[in-house]
Length: 202
Image (tube, rainbow, N blue to C red):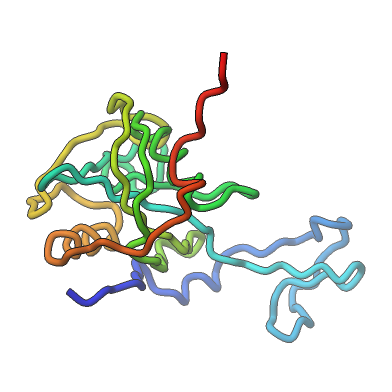
């Protein structure tokens, strides 16, 4: 199955309607309505600050046991509330993507995992205010108890061949289908960051 790595859920022209900064967050000066920056980015004429809008980096974790895959139902306070997804989340500043994946899995599922491989990197255009660049990782369970948390209100194992409930993200369906139809091993990862940190000695 050929990889697909770009997923669009809306008309990109809507992004142009997003509100811009009115004041510079660095010096407080009013920003002109028409930027003089060469790429039309909001630009402060007083301190030369430029607003770069970048996709948010995230991770998605594919956890399988036999012919089952773990999915979570998204909480009412989260994006795409009520729909289901693979565990995942955003990478914190100063955090590497492997550590983020281990942390997000623990926060959303209660499970400790070891990251086994990188299986894809995808761009998601979810809404005018939400573009993400997501590293997709395979993981195996080391321990813990499956308990939903953070943005997830229910966890359930589903057969890899489906049927699936409503999925929040088109990319998740494609990832699961590739796992089912191919020997999706992936690229090796740095073992130093692929597991939860060891508990401090007593």
